[in-house]
Length: 128
Image (cartoon, rainbow, N blue to C red; front, side, top):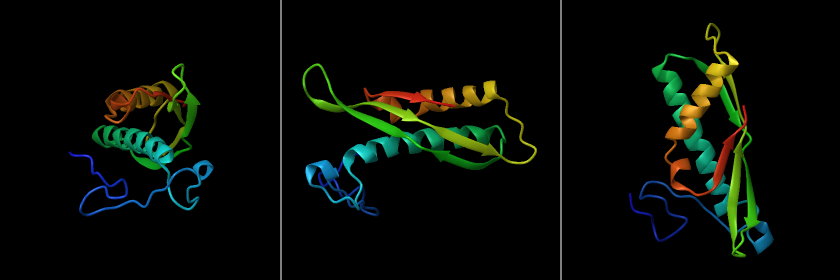
């Protein structure tokens, strides 16, 4: 997949209106690139988690993540998103039993197989 030259055009069939962060005179009603990165990591983890659950016939009723990214200066003085913390909360369907150890294992699998997380140097942690 090629990356488009226009940051607001994702593919021919979809688009995303984007802006700089408010601190850089951006539009607060639009997503900024840092939020998009955190959202991509969160979404990739969720979709990998849900695919694993579907394959194992584990019924998920709800999945909610309050992901947070940290924008910091590195030793080289450049800003980057250095850390992202995912805070997924999962509710399984009636009759689906998942203990804490199995839940941790599924999240570990999702993290290890999320191609977005595997593509960035940002430290990504999952708090369960």
